[in-house]
Length: 458
Image 1 (cartoon, rainbow, N blue to C red):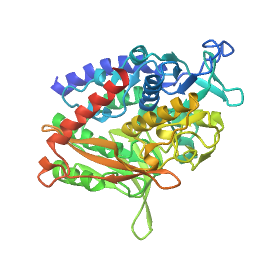
Image 2 (cartoon, one colour):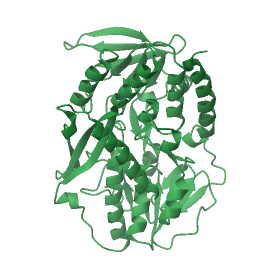
Image 3 (cartoon, rainbow, N blue to C red):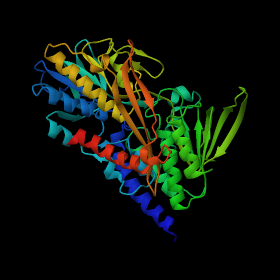
């Protein structure tokens, strides 16, 4: 038995155990609405903030609202039983040193205990803005201010109109998107560990989706993993359009680190997937607008579908825009236009800022300042309205291993008169010798991740 065969056996056992343990936390099971008439907590004393979502945005908001006003009661509603990070998770897929499941997962209650807010594991099933009540699978809770930071949902139905529920469920299980934390990442990792020689296909959707650089960083990490493990095959990116976040930097890394192992194909619309034959069927449009039907075999498929706002946003009834369902904001604010007592942060925010963990962290702190002021009867204007926020977002992407190397993008945030907008810049680091990637940026990637997680839980 070879080393890889041993690894396969061990990987199947370990990953299966973890995936099984995480299934309920990813919301796969049918919501339990029994007991929804119960109250989760006594009636508010007039200063209660309920936050839907225990990710980067929600947990940051909870901490900083409490930090700004200890008399404000903060309650986080989160359906998962653990926190698992999407940022830095591609390093796990790449098998990078000292990156394990423990690196990405954290106890949700530790932050609540450290910062004095309440954490309730439950799933939101309805929102009544008139009575200011949120209904969950375990009961109801009233609020004075509501913060929506629920993240994304996948929109298979919009992209693949010919697929029924059974087909979608099959694809979700066997070609996991891995843009939402939990079993998806572990299932994808297990498939990589068990794969034979052959190709890995990653599909990149058009439109707004979580973390634009993620599919391209993932291609690098999977290519790196295949090289370390001696797996023959290519990583093929089927891009629905031409856009590549951090494009010059990624393309430089693909060419110089991986040669022909990574193939990027543009203007590819996925038509169908045959899981039995392990084959993707797609239509590609050339520069002249002519189309050609194609198909390609795979060993592993990472199908990332169109994204949309989490259903919580629709439950709230606030005004949205675009097919994604971005929340319309109340000017230079994280308050919604529809309701002064409802705020939105994270993936669903209507401002033109990148959907990343760092942006969610920044926006949550800004929203927290607004909320504390509102609860105390004070006016508050975001600083970005008067002055550009330099490097409001810093997003790192690992591109190489042994030696480690990474690239980065920074976004300056400014008020346009209509929205807060991010302007990106992909710098070449001082130690990069004229390249976009470097060892020091990889070191900074790890330091950034440790820092932002510490900000949430310490």
